[in-house]
Image (cartoon, rainbow, N blue to C red; front, side, top):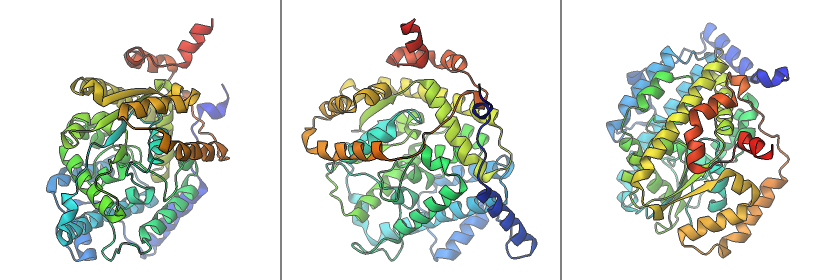
Length: 425
């Protein structure tokens, strides 16, 4: 096998320049090392905003656990420390501003969230494609990318005025391209593109966004033992705020998706008891390889000490746990409220697969077809690089992955490369 397939890609020189610049600024006394500690960060956010109420204190324990893991495990470089501080500071500002909005406009929290449609699948299993096809249908409400980056409007927000959060998202994406353009090859997006609600869970310092960005295994392991209801309750509050800021009808169902739901289906169904769930399935070799590649390409931005084999082992473990929890939680979902869609079927006949989805949702697909066809044409015509990865570069093999996740393949009759080869012999 070629050497470049066995070696995961390096980050860009831009990251080294930023990290070295921060190091020089510290040495010259122009910058101080950020304090990734609970009380200094809370005090700084209160001083920045003049506000005191962070809302439901449920977030405090995951916040403290994440900070501890960042200090003790993540091995952040100078630029990574600065970026982590900036991200956490923004999250705390958002929590303070959110409570201010709820106080100013109590009608926000009275908005209903009727029968949401939720796409659930392992990371890299086609959830984004399903989500964006459905988002083309104006009968649903969805988040846009700038709203998952900044779900809380700024204090001077006015309906109808230019929203500076859009410009912030553009700048963040520009920096992301400079830091590692592969991350946007893996998950192409833009400020106004439909996007998942993972950023809303970040406002509770919860979940997989942190796992895929930093090496924080003890934080991840702790989250996997906890009840996620608090994070889901707060996410529902933020969805109400986003819907209010969009001025969208509260009668339109929300369209949601994030791989986090694979871990937390019981919490999701307690907070959204009338949800309709679309499960996506894909060859686990592709899922694990692609997930490890995504995590690798983000983590190397923030740390100089990332081990590809540890990344591979962690994402195989996480994928296995996701699938085990999903399969157990499905037993509590009535058959009429869930449907299974195969990645390979979507690749072969997306229109036929979407017809099944619309029948499940008891909706006429006709009104949505022009917009979905336009989305398909636009994405197929984009000249973007293909996401290249292999299991081997992360110390894994198809035999290992299928040996651990074979029950998933058999239960849902998932097409795998190995099964196709066996059938053609």
